[in-house]
Structures are given as structure tokens and as C-alpha cells.
Length: 161
Image (cartoon, rainbow, N blue to C red; front, side, top):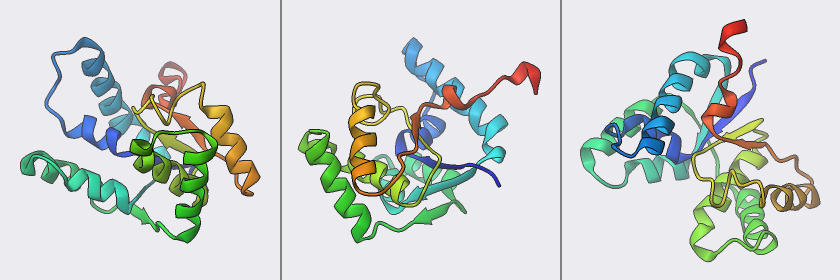
């Protein structure tokens, strides 16, 4: 059985964006493309309706590209349990109100038992200082937190494959 990876919106945004002139962003885009091309088949990819909503926003041409990349990806429900866990994450991790969508991404991945939540959002999601608090809230609600990571952390050892 393939591990389940929840893709947060920043992943598809990096895939659909024009190459950045910023060195770090360009490197993140390259790693994201490499993961998408090489490693994606090894995972069961899932998203939530929130990812679709966020991907559809903004420049219509880029939104069309993002949505095309997500075509056929399984969409997880944002049910009462996801909403409840998201609220607990905002309160228990002390996330700012503007991070409500980030809490929903985490909660959807947790509730639907994703093994990984892949993101480039290192402010509120893949953040080493917040991770223990996120994991604690998940445990208190009877869940196991996924590994919160960036695509480069899921590239594996390409030389020994």
C-alpha cells in the first residue's frame, strides 16, 4: 500500500508558477517539479476542497494550470471533525486567526489519516517549533499527526533506487 500524501496548495502553486528569479524560490520550484515527476507515483495523493478553492483563486490562466494539475486527485471531505480539529489547532498551537486555512489543511490531513502533509508553508505548517504542539493537539483528539514536510524531504535517495 502506497503512503498517503496530502498536498497543500503551495505545492501545486509552485508547480504551476513561472520560474522565479528569487534563488530560493526557484530551487523550491525545481525540487517540487522533481518530486512530482519522480516520486509522485509512489504516493497516494490527496487534497481537500480547500486546496481546490485556493488553487482556483487568482490569475485565471495560472488557476487553470493549477486545477489541471489537480485533475483526478482524490478530494477529502472537510467535515465536522476536520472543522473541530482545526479550531483546536488554532487555539492549542496559538496560530493567528489568519492561519485558519493552514489549520484546516492540517486537520484534513490528520482526520483522513495522511502519512505526509507536503507543503512549502514553513510558517504555520512545516515548522519545527510548532510541530510538537500540533502533534500534541492531534493526540489529545485521538489522532496521529502526519509528517509535516517539504518535497525535498520526500525525494529519497535517488542514487540507490
